[in-house]
Length: 258
Image (tube, rainbow, N blue to C red; front, top):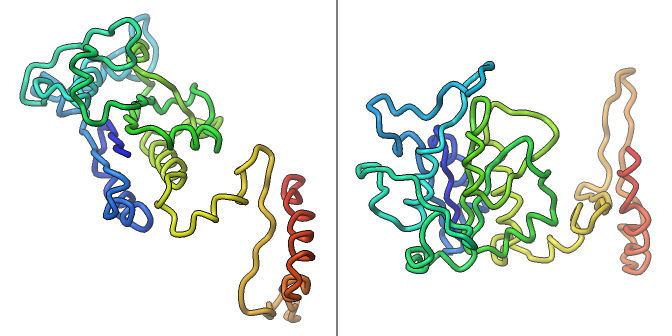
């Protein structure tokens, strides 16, 4: 999968994308990340990406032109490179990509593309959405800032996604959350694909059973200086797989009431 990110803070992404599972997945050619600096797609010498909203009000709105030029460039139009003249692409009826179909067909990544704006007013990200997006060939993530996007930009967007009912300073953290959630669904990214089968939210409403590891018993000193022993449930040490499975089913939903 190819993942493009459009942001005004490109330096925020490499430290996370180049570590752990994502780093290994890139080495295995499962993931291909490209971070685009929105300011590179501006025309003025100050690299201005925002402006005051029509009708008045506080804050600044992200302009449509830099995003449109960046989308056009990602889609394969090299004339939209930051050093070239930026032109707002035409939206073709029936196309979900902001350039002509004939041009889109030239892109080796054009099989299934999703253009996603990270937006607190969008639909909330779920495991179900993550699984669907994991089947795409390419995702293009728009990380907003300030008071949001010029609403005309949504003409070139397939989905608006939020990571929760709250507002952050920008879309960079939501973009990373979406990347982390989606990419682990791609075969080969996780070391053990069995990890996906019974994890929390693998099915709507499902919360995974408690997990334990060594040592079998640990001693914890309490506030009254007394020692309390915390032990692994005996059934998990029994070797009886039927009873273990029964115990896990019983405790799988227990966290829902917490």
